[in-house]
Image (tube, rainbow, N blue to C red):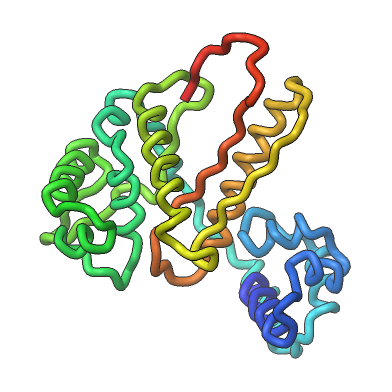
Length: 250
């Protein structure tokens, strides 16, 4: 309930001022923007002190405050399932980009799920979609329930820091699609930017952690509400200088 009220209030303020940002909302609530982001994305348990402070800053009625307190006192369901780790054998089966796109497409509740509809939406030959569905089913990533296709896991993860030819191939295909997006989509439909910087190599591990955290937080923001499109987020960080030969990783 607290998350809902915060989102409603944030939406109300952005309608009044389209330039109103999440950082500005956090400033007006007098809390850290990271704390606000964690609450909105339900990654943080709200303590009594923070809750009391936020409720003072929100235009809430006594009934609304009672609902929020009641909701927070109700135990949340325990997440028992962790995202499975996909091994190299499965990655070899689903290395082509359309497998990942189809998995995301199946999360679109209102989209038609027939192979022909998926082929049209993803601009693929129907034969390729059928092959990808067979691969995903054999890998245990989708199942059929009364003729309906269902994703067996909300998400999955791959190993980190281990060279993977299959992941290299998948990344290469997505980079190629990003190049095509430069001409196929308007600037209102895409965001492709970059920066070139001189860095200290010792900070790379921290940079990778921040990129992973950013991907997770951005995914949680974009997944709010009902999904109606499939997007791909690419983040590329790579050297332009070659002072040594490094092992090629994923």
